[in-house]
Length: 122
Image 1 (cartoon, rainbow, N blue to C red):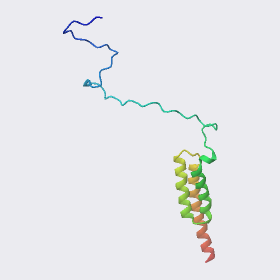
Image 2 (image 1 turned 120 degrees about the vertical axis):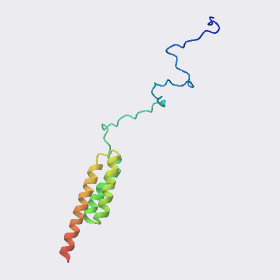
Image 3 (image 1 turned 135 degrees about the vertical axis):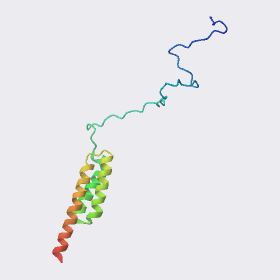
Image 4 (image 1 turned 90 degrees about the vertical axis):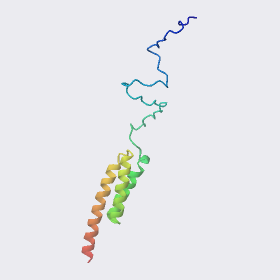
């Protein structure tokens, strides 16, 4: 086995990483954190990535609130439908945006219907 002569300076190979406690050169970029193990990917659903009806609960409840808002307590059910529709849209439900729009339209229609019926009745 060969040993370098005593007092000789050893030069590390280019491929050898510096030890962890070695200071970084002043012009070096900051070290990036090490990534953890890769996370497993779930395969896309058989429907091509579209959500099934059971996965769109918030959007469906928003549509129901939109229908109820036309006939009963338009402000209450209209706002609830808008909130449910927006929450569904943020979760990635395709019907979420339309539920929020329908609830807003139902709230306006229910309020107008209430005003018309009150003016006719009195």
